Image (tube, rainbow over all chains, first blue to last red; front, side):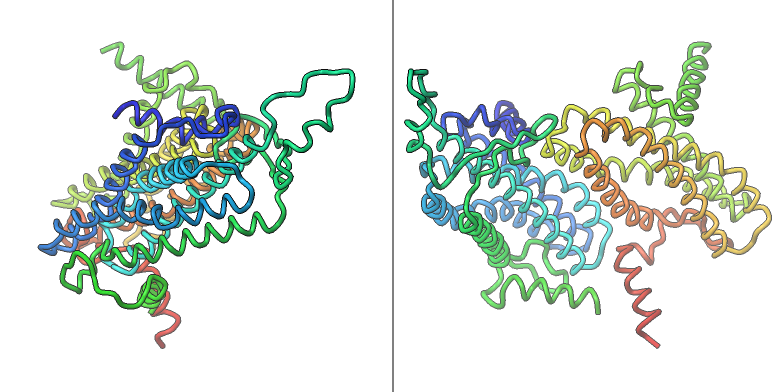
Amino acid sequence: MLIWLKHLDRVIRGEAIRPSALRSGDLEQPVGGLAVIGILLGALYGLCMGVFGLFQHSHTALLQMISTIVKVPVLFFMTLAVTFPSLYVFNALVGSRLSMLSVLRVLVISLAVMLTVLASLGPIVAFFSASTTSYPFMLLLNVLVFTIAGLLGLRYMRVTLQRLTAAVAMPVVPPLPTEFPATDQFADAVDPMATVESVRPAGPVGPLQPTVQLRQNRDVQRVFQIWMVVFGLVGGQMAWVLRPFLGNPAIHFAWLRGRESNFFEGVLQALHRLFS
Amino acid sequence: MLNYWDRLYALLARMEALLRGETLAFKAVPARRALSQLVVVIGGFGALYGGVMGSFGGVEGDRILQICYSAIKVPILLLGVFALGLPSFYVFNTLMGVREDFSKAVRALMASQAGLAILLASLAPLTLGWNITSLDYPMTILFNGAMFGLATGGGQILLRRHYRELIERDPRHLILLRIWGLQYGFVGIQLGWNLRPFIGTPGHAVSFFRADTWGNAYVFLFQMLHDMFLKK
């Protein structure tokens, strides 16, 4: 377990995705342990969410807490399962040479980053859960926290994919000095889709800072942006499908609610209830 | 006994140096001891001001309880908001790539909190004077709010001074400072609301919490504004 925590530490410090670590074109970071830690972190956040029910004096509070503790990790990993195939295909379409396993690893460590951010905001959410009686407020606060965690994790993923793609695109063997200029010999070896310029930021490099500015054409960038929006939409709707997480104190407890409406209507309704 | 007083005196001398802007005042002290000393300073001076706040209703009978309660609550407020925000601050610092400076950043934040507590305590005689001469409860709330505001302003000056070195080294620290400020304000308002009453309505029974408005400060604020402007 301790070694997995050390791995997580390497991941969030950005050591696992340092350009030098990605030179082989694959993430050398084993992700099995990270997935387990991710599940635990998600469960921890679920605990913080479940505190809301405890202070509502409902007898199903404990059931709701168990339900939430299980659901938060399930939410993230099911979203991963649903969006992974499209990420692999999009990535391949834009000319990346990453294998399916590589892409899966990238997605898993990005999920680990998301769950770390989530768990770190847990104390604040637990405090508000204990001291707030307003259900729409808690709903919106949790949506905000999940959004922050999701955005940071996606940014991490984008930086990692860019660095990996750049590492694979660059010729690994430098040209031997010959009498004739060797510059043109290796021109074909470079992926024409991804011309790389190194961007060296001042100071120690953080994992959220792009170190390679891939001169990808606008379409490629658009493709990734679309995928990230898709990830967000799937995540939100998956949360709706898995509801209830907080447990509306006015309604009886249920493990899952029926299929009706959708995530965005739910958020809009909560906003409306809060501001009216 | 002598050793205890020596250490206390040394701590106060260091705090004075900190207030004067010598950001290296705690440099010689190992991190864990420095932090525990700052916690003691915040706790001690915060409790002093809290006690003075609670003395508005007088010191007879069970009003003494209000003094004790407030003396406990102000340190809880100052330290609680700090503790709640630390885990996420740690993760944000790490993700931004400035983890090596984390202990310095925390020391800077704690130092400014300690400065705030000392400033508050220095305004305690003023508050005491107000409490003796005034019977107006709403005005007293405003007055105490103004004292907190003054102390916060002083705390900000200290914070900027301590953080300047970090920001000069790496501009990312400025972003992190802003995030900290946002988080701190967000949590602080709610915790301050929950820990009411600090002054205590004179003539009413003394209680640790106000049972009726245990809830969300923002929801309450919004309802209040809504009623003020939309319900004619």
